[in-house]
Length: 407
Ligand code: FEO
Image (cartoon, rainbow, N blue to C red):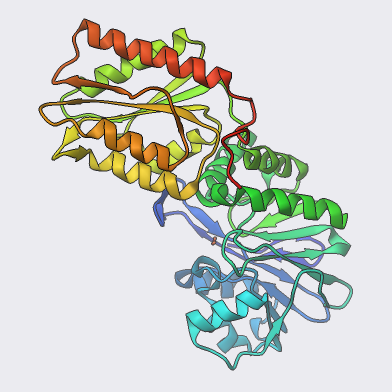
């Protein structure tokens, strides 16, 4: 790719990964980008690198502006390998005067690459570095997304280089938010939030408050993945504010796996009850839906009704996978219930209910179990379960961070 000047003397010099389809368990059907930024000033500074297989894309892109050997400073905002994978090659090629990182960043770079001898320049929140006409200041953002993470801010350009924050996994030939479909962009950003940052929502709220407290003016947000927020960057900050509060809408999800369609029939009846009770709902058969797409839907859902047939005294493997993934991401403020068909032992409903309690989902009743195939009265019980879940969901505060919130 050719470099793109995003502000005067600030260039996007990253790489496009059109083909990645799995990002540590997160489905990326439209690929991703690894964004790096080059500032041309008295001290030529590269912010972040790219995933190692894309090292040559980065070097070729930089070479269209300057000889990479002229780079003075390398800022490592985040050490996860999609951004730092090319750091050893760049340090070797460039021989930078400084490798700038957070205190945790230095530890992580040493842990990853075993190099104590790099010219580390450790910075903390509030510290700054003069590049010439431009000055960059740093904001540590621990756990957004790793302990080492930080953001860089160039006051002269009102430009926030936000690392993982505000990113999206979406490879496009466009570089700016105003060049693409906004609804699709926000969908990718929501998926990114739901699957990468949801569990750190309290920290996101603190970060937004800190940015307000510091009075940082933001004209553009340039993340390390996806599109740059050039037009109305406040829109994605507002979206993060909303997502971090885990505000839910009148929406339920019915998620299930089924062996011989008995559990699927139950799912349909539960949906009927949810709708009668006043909740919109979406159905997801785990055979056809990826866990990361489901988590995106969980983000603003108020009720989760999870079902599985019993297999080998347990639940179907895809349901166990989803529950494990969801537990790690810690959604809050949900109500729900479990259901499922069985042949002789029927443990799945109990096991799903226990797992849901472990995610602090407020359970409505004991769930519904059906032997082999649901009869009319069984389907009526499922409809009634849907109605009960809808009533409980509508009783919740609109804010998901109500009584059931965790800090
Ligand atoms: Fe895009 Fe946490 O790395």
